[in-house]
Amino acid sequence: MLVRDAMSTLVLTIGPAHTLRQAAALMSARRVGAAVVLDPDGTGIGILTERDVLNSVGLGQDPDTERAHAHTTTDVVFAAPSWTLEEAAVAMTHGGFRHLIVLDRGEPVGIVSVRDIIRCWAPQRRRAEQVPA
Image 1 (spheres, rainbow, N blue to C red):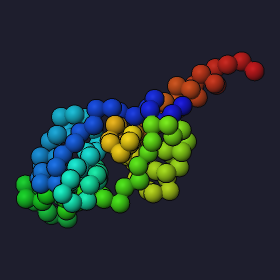
Image 2: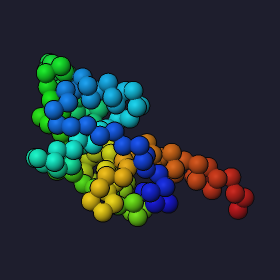
Image 3: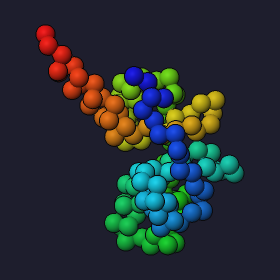
Image 4: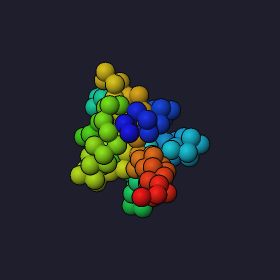
């Protein structure tokens, strides 16, 4: 199975000036764990995850004044839609993260998460276990 089969194609995109509260509200409303941060004048494409917001709040920072750009990961590993789920899982494991932005011709077309991969693999494994030997 390929990344294109598992990825979410509804990508939440925010700007670097969004506050963490705004980002968290948008992620909560969309029920996603990450937002793509587009900064055309700066770092380009980055990612802000629920863990980034949690870490900031845990440090006592104010989510109404903290901006996404200060918490965005810009050293991003991108996936291609043609990657296998195994390749995506290896990249996530190696990098220690749970989301990959999927790029096609340099544009974000989706996000694949560990949860997406598990969702795809779990039914396959159950079907394989049910097949008589």
